[in-house]
Amino acid sequence: MFIDLMQSHPKSVWKPLLKGCIACLLTLWFSLGLWGMVPAAASIDDDRLDGNIFVVYAGNGSLVPAKLTLSDSLARKMPTILVYYLDDSSDCKQFAIVVNRWQEFYGRAANIIPISVDGIPIKDNYTPQEAGYYYKGIIPQTVVLNQEGKVVFDGQGQVQYEAVDKVLREVFDLLPREASVELKRRSFNEFNTELVEE
Image (tube, one colour):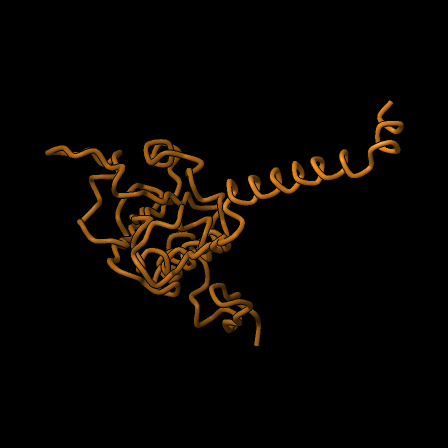
């Protein structure tokens, strides 16, 4: 029936069909905003919220949420790295890459707990099993607790990888950096580096 209709009235059938298709395409085009789609604009150098910094800038979604809580980590007598951060801080965005490197080398032996300071409950006193106990009000802040739960490092701002590495080598009774094989940084993209032998 449709073929017969098309053969007997070719112009009268195709003209409205074509107009309908064009109208549908234009409606779809404007409703989806395809005429001026803006690419994603995440920037490591500003204080805008672009999403979780460990996922966006360190390429590592396994850091958040942490596998163990602070209380679990202390109960297991596991060395712990607390990293206080905000997702909308350029300093924290840049520092996320360093935290990712700590996980690369110490993630199986130490518990790394990134803590968004917005999530710390406000109260007068905290216990050593609570993240607020160690927080000094500056971001980023890095606190390293040894197996006994004692603070062995408390760095404020963007601390160097090597500073925490030195402390963790002592915690795990590893050779000092000077006695180890010399590793140099090699950049493989604009954000991440890796350590390689000379």
